[in-house]
Image (cartoon, rainbow, N blue to C red; front, side, top):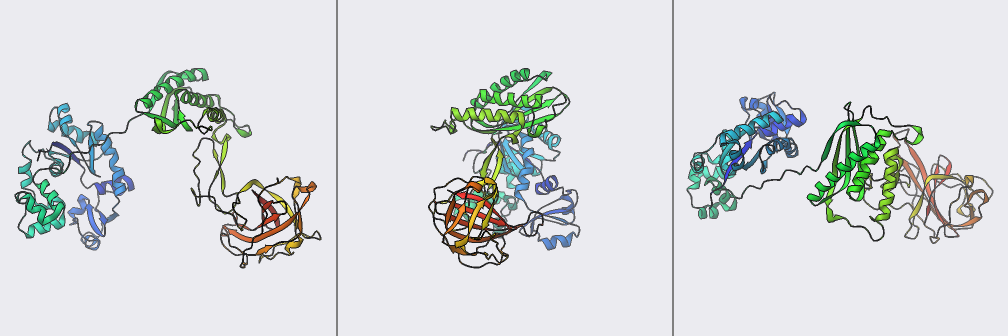
Length: 571
């Protein structure tokens, strides 16, 4: 077995308690205990003074210290709070491995040679962590991670070659395996030296793999070399300008230079940018920020264009819709910063054969992005399908270039089908604004839907006319009828089903005043919807119908407060 490398380990005492203070504001100076599975896993120094120990049950711990503050164990919170500490260590030494939240290790050779000795390196790292994070820590140096961790609890530097002797005096509880330690003590093995003296083969046969691993630690060995992490590469580029920039042409020159630097840096790491953050600081300290998204890969020219467009929008105070103009910066720009917010491997995207990411799409994207740079991101929007019970709810508008992921109920899934049983497939064209319509019987009397969803006229006598002369185009879906059994009293929550189906000789004027009547060959419904009934402002109670026409058209109708509406036209 080769000798383990000299290892420096930084340990932050009572880290779960300290993390609770950093993240949740729990005062760590008082009696605090962190519990997991109703047992104490960590406690503050003040709690230890009150008799609190690891392993105590909650009731016993609170009995010993009535003023004890109890915090639930949260490994995620511990890890998040420890990240700044690791980053601080990486500022003075490289090759850091996080052993667990509250402890990190690195090979001692580098910092020892740089700072001129093990003691100097330990002092420098502890001091830097204290200054950067306001966190107290201790450093231990020994041969191997396990021994260095025990040395850190004593703030000790074990001399080279002295690790076996240092470990031999440690109790078996130092292994961190309570069940194994209890068994070893009952067998008369009380120290790591006693345990290390046993034959490795006998330990493996008696205690299994976990016991063999603990035996290797007790003997001064490691189970593996350090798995150091690499600090994230800083791809950001920035430029401090000699004179405040207030003219767009001067800003464009600075943008081009900065864009080329960013592109070269990304290319050096085999990366390309798909989302770009543009940040600017004015001479008065005003901070400006905007994120640009792109479906393809941003070239150096594309990056420069977007920076120039954005600076043009900021410096010229481009107008918004409605005549408003965003405020111009109070002073010239003195600092530019480009942040590649979204990167991927450069081979990750290729121009599409049919224009998905090709030149035509790029030209369109450049034009629309230009408009956004001048008028704001909300000036150009696209529709995205999501969840919802109505056609209007299933569509939302997002700024051009933003992520088009579905949102709301059923996000990411196919758009749920609407009521009824039209022959599949039955997609539809959703009307941005529902069209008002009149539904009349054969005598010209408006059709009424009662509170119990009863229709005042039989289906063979219904006619429909869209008001205002609005045009609803012809569609090609096959005609059909549908039925839905059951009853409803109009009180269903979130959409129930009721009604039936009919076939007959009703007529419909689909194009408004001048439309040619079309025979209704089938209908289905009604389907009640009673949404947000608890909110008087947003409450919506309506019933929906499907009607099939003789020319193959099919409409989705809704009746709301006695008004008939055309919500969609089925394809």
